[in-house]
Length: 252
Image 1: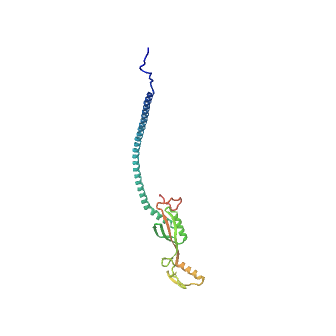
Image 2: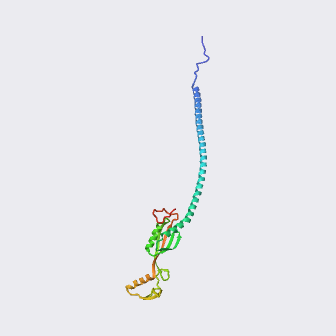
Image 3: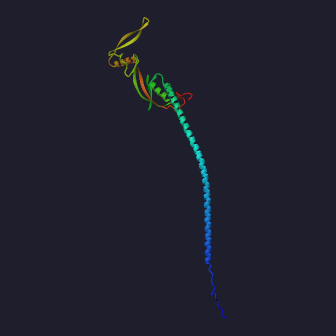
């Protein structure tokens, strides 16, 4: 008996398509998982950053409040410093010149007297007269010990003559009592219980003796003095007082 197979030869099933589909689906699932993880991580980081931003904003607001308070304190401090500076200037302008003049008065030794005190841009100019150079040196040293003088410089000295007859101070000696070849003097004498003036005639010898005789005549009718100018830089606030200074003030 002859059998006929109408179905033909056996058909072989192919599984490669199923594998590809399964791989594609797995890839999609994996990709979705990765995207979800990334999204979750980004969202978490964003939330953290947002939280940090809020905290920083709160800190910034607090700092703004503190900064405002600090600025207000700075303004008050500047106002206080300005007031203190004004008070210091007023005290200096009130007390400084008084103490300076007091120290100048204290610095004056015997044989020195002042004629003028003039305060200028380059310092205080003190003009005076003295019986000699030594008295001027003592006056300068006393001024240097004062707490109100930063520098003391002797600017000028010149020889002057005090005329006994007129009481005037001049650059040249009194010549009214000097005569060519004679000298007129007035010498007191006691007569009848009173004082009378007598006139005496003195000859001026020539040669080397003439200069000495004239010097004696000049010294008799004139007093030699020194005229000086001192420039002193004043610090009314007062420099650091050295211990043992003669011009220190009590209660400062």
